[in-house]
Amino acid sequence: MTETTAPVENQQSQELQSLLTQQRQAYMANPSPDREQRVNDLRTLARMIREHQDDLVKAVSADYGNRSHHETLFAEIFPALDGIKDTIKRLKKWMKPQRRHIDITAFPTSSTKVIPQPLGVVGVIVPWNFPINLSFGPLINIFAAGNRAMVKMSENSRNLTALLKRISGDYFPQDKLVFLEETGGVGIEFSALKFDHLIFTGSGATGRKVMAAAAANLTPVTLELGGKSPAIVGPDYDTDTAVERVLFWKLFNAGQICTTVDYLLLPEEKVEAFVEKAKKVFKKRYPEIQHADYTSVIDEGSFQRIWQTLDDALAKGATAIDLTDGQGSREDPLKKFPAHLLINVSEDMDVMKREIFGPLLPIKTYNSREEVADYINSGDRPLAIYPFTKDKELRDYYIDHVMSGGVSVNNAVLHVGQHDIPFGGVGESGMGHYHGYEGFLTFSKLRPVFYQGPLDPLKLLMPPYGNLANKMMKLMLRLTK
Ligand code: NAD
Image (cartoon, rainbow, N blue to C red; front, top):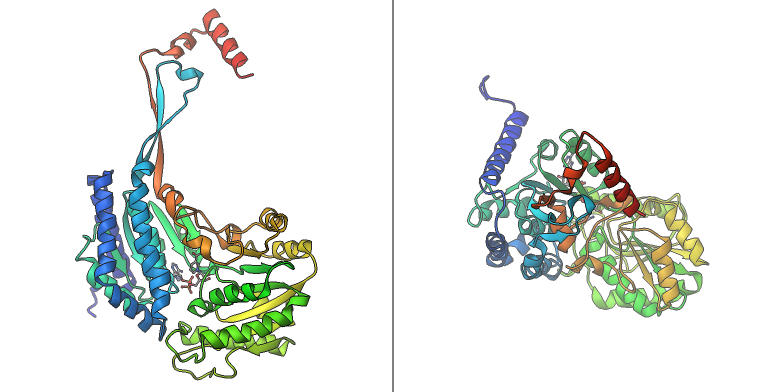
């Protein structure tokens, strides 16, 4: 390095700033793309995915060590493509300016409209766990709303990011879309840019830093965070069905889903049946955890963290049921963590204090619905709750008494995949929404416009304020009753 070369961080932030400037200038030159342009962007996004589908799937798997190809197709490629299709279908309705009512001050010839307009340049910060879904998902809403985007990927998505950086230029100019890798400190520089909106998906700890950096620019943020989402199996609910569904989601992506069932609340009398059925279901689905269907833990640090979580629970008196019958190894180069159920858990254990993000399922027993509601409400507001019951009153009790980002009833996670409902956390699990119409709104400025008509009733209210103005004010105030 010569003495005149700028330090790496400076270069980095200059490059980021220059990309932002390019995107902002392009936005200024075409601030409100019409529907045809937006649909074209969305179709191009779909083409980019379709033409590189196999490579995308392989890249994610390489980043994990092993990621089930089916799970990548099901939870990343399919929702992105289907989300694009759904958005194109609805976009005309979403973009239509809405006529609104007028008040007495505008009566009778003036009018109002609300026009959704693009915000400009949106920053997207992506975690590693569903890196295609969590980059393309926001991009669908961002492009539908007519914006441009800079997308910062995770340090754990190196292969995928290299691929996206290589191919995206064939589909979009960099003043429309650019992918950035995390090379140490980029995230910090990135969240300090003066975006028109910033959407962050990741942990609460990082979310706080991102929000603090954005605050300096008054950049609005959407934070998609994590937490401990419980499944609550009601006394009436069929235990076998609960096992089938809870285990599917707990083991999908090896438990590394923000909305996975973090822990289970179960009536005491159901525990034995649940455990026995879980052993059978697991054996049938994953006879060998070295099989490609069983996803790896993302990195060595996370792998060891989950082992420590298990050790901590055992040391504090939990009973562990190893569903794999001892197939796991702490030295496994593929980092396949053996699925365990944990019973007799207590609040001092890490497994009950922190988001697990791995294939450990603690089972906590309860005696009444009030006890369940009090327990969940005493912690951070979760990203989701999953009541399993056919009793409508009990179902609604949980929906009414326990606040969470979202709810799936008699299953888990599925509300996240529905295009026509918003997705987002509340409290510690996040703020703001995306997906569907609410996502379109998140990345739009709802522009209220007042159109003065030929008749102007305010003329009657202008100074010098005399009798006429008094009468008018009296009438107006009377009409408020
Ligand atoms: P993370 O918070 O460590 O990282 C997320 C992203 O932020 C990465 O791109 C990372 O490089 C970047 N980053 C790290 N430090 C930064 C900083 N100081 N400034 C700006 N950016 C920074 O999270 P992770 O380990 O990648 O993902 C796991 C977490 O994400 C879990 O808590 C999970 O629940 C949550 N998550 C939430 C959702 C959701 O939709 N709500 C979805 C997936 C994951």
